Length: 506
Picture 1: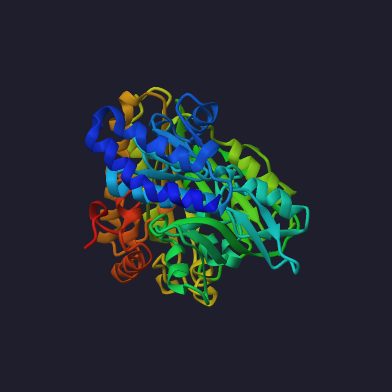
Picture 2: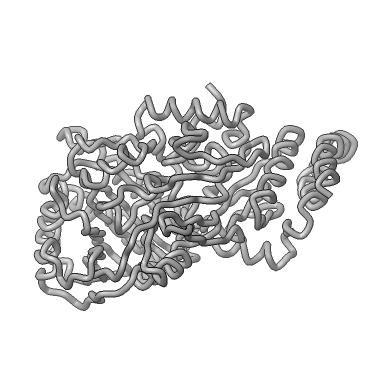
């Protein structure tokens, strides 16, 4: 049977050339690509009239992604399925220009990040599996898993791993983009805790990348995103973990100055490594508000590090409690819904109280450009990035994010906006991009800037890979040339953030 499958793959060029040159390319080329794939992949390929296709196409986080129309969708369940799909797509790209996208959880909001018009999707969501090894030091996770399902299984065993903070977010995109966790103060970025990646390369080979085997690829995948292959399994460090303290407090917007002072103090050189904070100021359809999301990695009520924030008044209500990680990440997931038009935009700067206030004022001023947009939600989010996080990478083998503990405490800025009408896309996107540009210019003028742009928060027009620095970018490009010599993941996979301009090799 395997010989017959590979025979079909080898015949794809002949079949493609016949149909392209002896039929009407406009009428038949795209449909042939999927017909050829169906001969190889059978029921694991779905067409626009199939229920599996319809459900997948309408399940993205952002409406911009839902609006794209792939010609067919591959839903692998094993690494061998992915290998066969990549071998086939490589042939089809060579002879007919077929392009494809790789979809995990589908949470990145910009159009084309994990979907594609007139191309093929590899939907990894059926690549399941959460398996803890015998000594409970590692968990092996299928690339289609979501963090909520992982935590449910680990909570039952008194374990956890350094993973995402929103239960419905997928493992693949977050981890390959670096990944922030409630445990990052103790453990570093999510990618720092991946000890092995199972990867399908452009030629269909299934390999492992770790500290001892293909170590340059292992390092590249720690922040290098979808540029090298399709990761089918992540083997991640685990640790003992019981319940945590955390939750959400909703405040009056009048508390801004107190909030920013407390954020500045929390984000220190010697911060409490068990503490994680997400600070949000937002405008939502006529109402302003301030929201803090807290997490403390021990079941200690009202830990001292957060006392200044917990005591700020006036407050509207809170969800503070002691519970498990599954519960807290479900809460985070409930705070947003699928199907709206969405954007994320990001930058990073040094922790400076005066500049935090400046950035808040810039955001508040930019609101006038979008306030007339129907159903607009427009928020600024500040997240501490202290040396306790950035210092963890080197002892764990390094990563590709370009951050250095000597930079001192940093702040990750995130703009989050949602709205309902495509007619307002340019208004919201232009306002956000101008805001980030002004923040970067002001930060540079005050010697507070940092080139890091957290990839998982980046807008499609941003360039987080270059933000890692020229040496790391060159190292990533070298890994691409070594493991993908024909540039399949640069040329045939337009989604995400590429290593070369327009996917072309330099």
